[in-house]
Length: 465
Image (cartoon, rainbow, N blue to C red; front, side, top):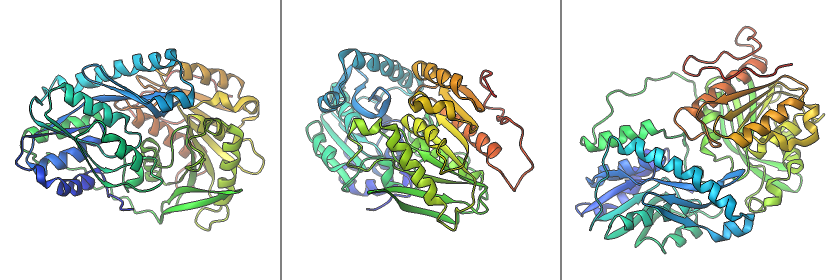
């Protein structure tokens, strides 16, 4: 499988496949946020106008990265009945998710539309571009939105996608262009070497550049001078009868290692966890991102919530690190999201491992059950202020954890930390917790609690014992 360097690289390569559209009456439409950097390069190469088409994925409750549908501007709604049936969603469940995502849809559209008016699609070719297709729900909604806005022809173009979902898109688009359809594809990040989060500010900047002639940005980011890691490899870990895929990064003179326990519906390719891992790497922490389930197991909802199984595999991966010359002896921390947080808390109590710190982002700490009363590892629970159900569950879990346990509430964040600046703050909180509680030979002892950077004001006080 070809791996794109980043979204801009993917956009430039995709543009070469779309040369036939140059000189035609086409509008390039990027799907915010990740599709816009790809669409920018396509529009630039085709000398075509660039706009966005705003849609929202509808995620399964407590498994939000698994989409059961999507909604878009103009009241468009797409539901995947197979997923709804498989996970047992009720009409009430669907309505609750739709209400939340409709508010987010309006908010995101307003952020873009207050500065950039919508480019008319009537009688034109709508060339919809995303960074990849995993479930297809968002792309299908985008097709229907474009048709509702009067497009004469709808074309979907992506660098990479699931073979099955790309075929499904033919029902909604007049033409589908996809450069790669690898077997076993489950997450868009699989096709990218660098897959960091795209912010609303990034989207706005690219639209500004497109509407002013695709000029270069006023200033480029300064060279950070960071040394390249000494290890940056795809790996496999034996855990009983299965082998799980992962990705290991070890910086020069690493001060510790953080093992990521991915949540339900997520994987080592999760752009959010990869973004957090990059922040930790820059702070001198090694990271291991690996899948707790195989591709064949991910569709089984009982396994997704089998915390005992997930914890056992997390322990096995932790012990595997002790067999490698580049990670042996490094103090270890766990970073868990969603159900992965419960697995991290439960694994942290296992006598076969010595875990120095645990961080949960939007985690279901409550699912660790009775093991919470055995957690003595310094634990940080990061929760969005708008993720009210999970916040309540975390507070209940905190009340029974006997060791040091702190809750940090990120203002304005929902479950996936998609709002501007919220994932960045979560990453900073995680970085400071790990560099405080994982022993470091590079700096003097840190204070008991992390010092949060000025742009990230501290959350409300919480229990620490």
